[in-house]
Length: 344
Image 1 (tube, rainbow, N blue to C red):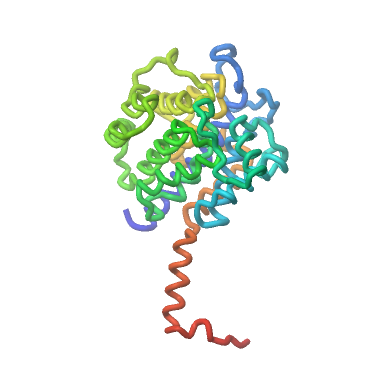
Image 2: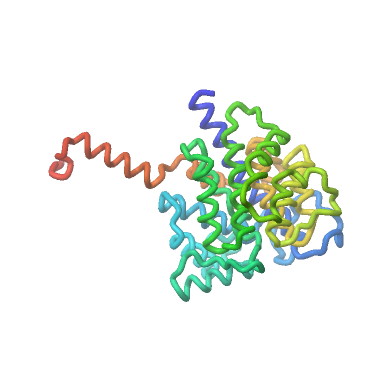
């Protein structure tokens, strides 16, 4: 694949990941907080739900994704203080909210933002076993795009970046490692320039890489593929990050299109919007933006804004790369750069 082909491939995958996340969020909000199977199954994005949203509007998952994307673009690198300030602007001023006000913020996120404002400590995530929520996993896509092979990052770099992104609000081991696993999966999808990576191969790579890793016991069976053969009755779509990761992977494994899997995820109920958003970033990357359902795209709020963010995350130079470019420019002036006078 030549450079232009690689660029188009990555753009399709990057936009698929971020738009897929938002689509899952917008789909699942209808069933948010409802016990599993206490409703008629969803077949489309219809809005409503506990926040009475218009069809295509989304919740905290997408808002926090956009805050994270904005920080990476503005700073050119992971900056915990900047990320937390942007989350606080969403929380208090409604920045990056589709309604102009913050709603649906999770308890663990709110506690971390409170702690940040009180102490100034940006790595404010709790390590308590009771704080293993899905709030850092649900917003992850920008981290994987910004640390992709297209941008010359290594798998180890994206794994570390996922950890740094998580601990701002979620520092419990399972929350961190779920983010790392998902970021690694996205990295593999973004690296598949030969388009030879099917789901079976992806799950095999997952098991080979993570099966012997020193990760929490709750995640071992998942990385070894237990979700593939589980029945729907065995899957939960709660806010517990282990359930969320498993449900997203189960929906992905047991479907043949983005739409089919998104409906599987959302129709689990409970934390339906986040389950579908986590599925959406993975499946959106796998299938690509070009294969997302057009009727859903037509409904999605801020559709083109989110697409643009994904493109910028893919193409905007990192702070480190900019510094190297400036160093090269200075060296080309043989030390005269600082003394050069420019006249009109």
